[in-house]
Image (tube, rainbow, N blue to C red; front, side, top):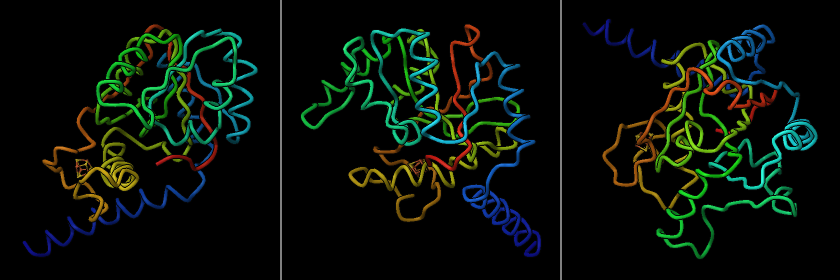
Length: 237
Ligand code: SF4
């Protein structure tokens, strides 16, 4: 029995070690190619770029002129923000950037603008994990980010680093519980969750729990509504 428990624990640690390693190791080319093919088969439109600068260029030179959005909003994403596109969109005279939070926003303001964001022409976000079979896995606290990805805005563009690729849904959820969600909690010190200390999910009952709604997006509907810019860098959480 003791040996059995030890073996389960060591398997768990090995899995966690492998997931952590993925943060730092470049993704293998054959895995990237397989993932892109799967995503396309799942009706997503996919662009593959080498870095954030290329992602930004691609967005403004190819995607933005084609979609011609007059309203744009976004769901919190470190990867998307790291490209610097929000600042550029804000300067454009042909488009309004719907901000869902700000220094003086009350909860009421935030809720109002989050609802408005779901009617934007274009919604920008990232993704917590992406499987080799081309499925998107996300977890959300409020739900406005996963809502925008699944329904509402006519177009969605997701910025995803290749470090987010995992073998399957189970591994993706494990990655989120042991890496992405605790790091996200640490990034929000005003919220109080046990994983800020333990650095792994405790499946908490905290009123400020960040992991309330899980979504798995198997396919893009309508076809190519969701555009993915896959960036060959380690980005986001
Ligand atoms: S469920 Fe709670 S403990 Fe687990 S990652 Fe989310 S916020 Fe942290």
